[in-house]
Image (cartoon, rainbow, N blue to C red; front, side, top):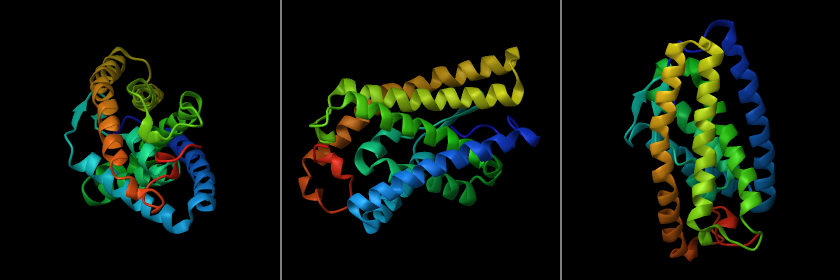
Length: 225
């Protein structure tokens, strides 16, 4: 979902600094909560795992440019379910930064735009999970419809933010609208795949209950809230 260079430039890009700062502040709040629950070491390890996964998602998995941005298999809801919201948030940001520094320096000016586009939908997934997953349900016991709802929330949020940045930067011209609609349509392919990926990963995790209590996964993966 890297927004194409030049879509937002000049003074307009300053808005991304504010939106990313807001996302970082919320992520820091969740990190403090995770430290109180599981300890700093667990947060650090899960963040490292999320960073590696994000780098693989962006750099190794298939991705292609469509319209105003790129379509990636980010699997944000998967990271949330396995590792928790704070590690997923920091991992997404750090993995994106690592990829930019090593392989795509032309994306670095848009870093805060892309961070906002990833993190705000992730936080929406967290809010939705609290509404649709009963307190007595561990994440390994999720149903397909719940995984689909979480995935749709994340991917839909990504598309919405890409559309916002495109219209904010380029206006509502016919060309921009066509590019945004092309990107949004292509991204819906990810919505088909991600819930299946979530359930497959959760099924594997369910068979590896020895991970419970190790600090390598979020406590909610195996335990009711």
